[in-house]
Length: 212
View 1 (tube, rainbow, N blue to C red):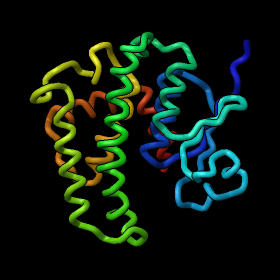
View 2 (cartoon, helix red, strand yellow):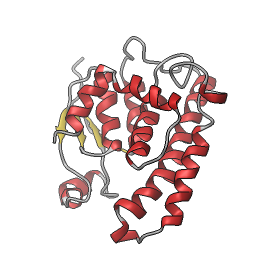
View 3 (cartoon, rainbow, N blue to C red):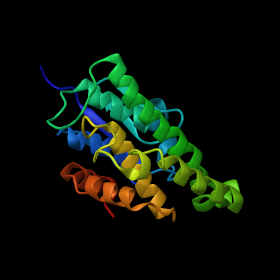
View 4 (tube, rainbow, N blue to C red):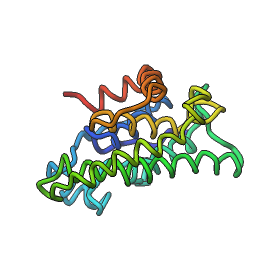
């Protein structure tokens, strides 16, 4: 059976990197539409028919359209045969444990910490300067990452003991975003990020996502 065409819209952000990374891990061929956020390219009539939220990334798989980076990586992980060493849970209890970490990363770290910093630091001309909010967001990130890998950062090399999963992919992009914004990371998160960044699929995705 022929594989339906895959297309990723978007480059240049940690969230678009997630889409490119999962496809690289799975060794899937796809077309890249290298549009960027806040460039006007996400408000064209063509793009708005795909995502009225005018956000990237967007994944097209045949006639299916999917938005939100966490949803995209989850879909790809379940829609195609997993490569060796990539953990995809097969029962409800195991999926719940994976989802628990994914929801934690996307809410506590990505939305409640990193995006607050982005709004009031990178985009302060739109959202206003709020140094107190930035400091609180950084403190929340540091506090919440203390729950990872057990007390003192001791534990397996991946977030789940079964192996590398979409939770590691999401977490790595958040750690990197936090580092770029001056959040101090404990050594175990620095080492974790270094291990993840050495994955060949990450390197291939990074070259596509950040061509400059």
